[in-house]
Image 1 (cartoon, rainbow, N blue to C red):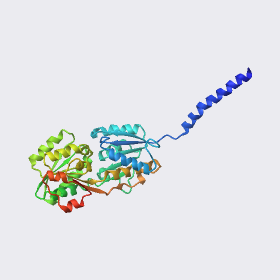
Image 2: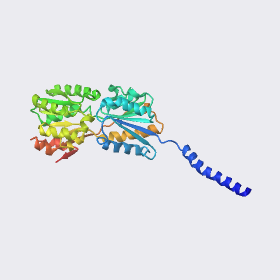
Image 3: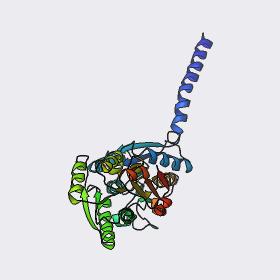
Image 4: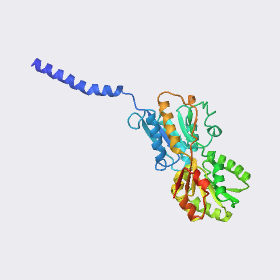
Length: 331
């Protein structure tokens, strides 16, 4: 009898160990770091950028779902939601925040001075107040900046080159993104004066504004339109492309999806390169680097896409030297 009771106690001890050991082993495994991805756009609009971001993470040694988690917050075109979404990620105590776009980066910076933030922006991060300088960011922010705002005058030149007889041009800005709208307006106004053009600045921040914008273009007898590189307009590339063709309005935008959807021309930075670099920086920070020690990178690759099918529909002849410079021609 004693030996039977002893065997039961021994087996009970083994059974208890079988339960405790795996739990202890799991408890000793380090928690997977969590990255917060914050954007003022929509997931489908960011699909190409997200693939590039994950590629950058992979190059840095991290694969989503394997050794890093990513929590996403989407403002869906409503910049006024960004402060609350930023606060959610801060409360979640994520290891790093990715801020897609200038308004998003500004909101993230206002939400935390301690959690590292890696941004991908079009505006000058020094002028916007995100970093002290490109080489020495200081604080808890660093990231990648594109040339999309800087090449705004070039978009105006492209319109002028295609339509040399046009003297009145319009530009479309999103007033809820002042970090893009204001510098874009200043630089294009200066460029318009240098070219002897009259430039009218039009505003749109909701879909309802588009009909008003195109009615105003008719009233102004504008010869062409330049759209600023805002993610709200990117999300509505197909709609804007259709409106520009319907109203016979030659238009240049900063992102390829506009030209691919039937817009006349796009000229701007390669977003895949920007977000791949963002992913690499996030990986480096997860490995212990401080944002203050990582200089802001500048993506210098710029793409010119021309939709010749649309040009023909608008009765525009694209000069051979211009089409010859294009990175892609859609026929």
